[in-house]
Length: 226
Image (cartoon, rainbow, N blue to C red; front, side, top):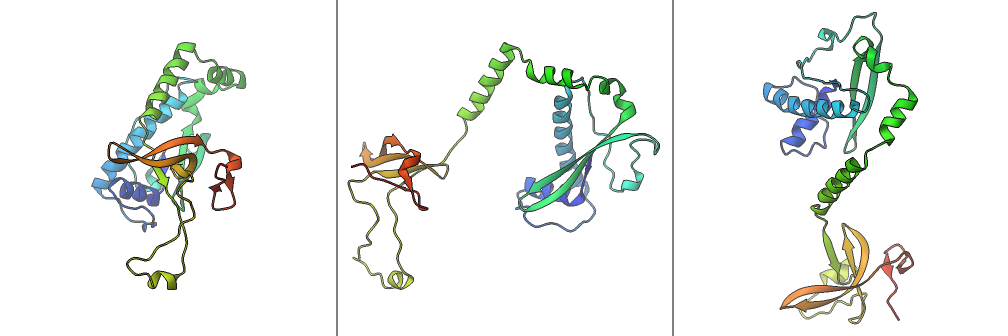
């Protein structure tokens, strides 16, 4: 597995709390950074082994980290190898990662890579396994947090008007007091509701789901019910 030094440094920076937005200059990777990268590589090799399970039980293990490509000898120069290249996108930056498989190590596996067997192994899933996968996905989705925002109203004013505001001034919003408000889930307008209170706490009662025909113009305001 070959990872560009820039990608390795970005991964380390992200894991240690950095932004990872800037491309670091190529430099030697410190022993502490090597330990962090090793953990990521071992996780990646575990996922790689799981990906191969539909064809054959192949195990991958971390051998060593080599900074000089000239000292890495995956296979003899006369040997045919299979190289898989990836573009890894982190923010607006793209980095390179390669996987190299010597064909002599995969002779038995390559004989199984015919279209019929791969297709069959990927499609035929026991019903019990499907149910387990469904329960696992449902469990993970159920514990996922989504921000919910009730947008009471909005308006726009000129900078001059903003600078001239004084205590007691009234800003007119774009909704009447008897109109429904929009409820955003993860930043997307999904529901309509009415504000109120429950046991002295602010609350919103959902009245309906917003439909495509409710959304109008670019500001995505919906048509109030007649």
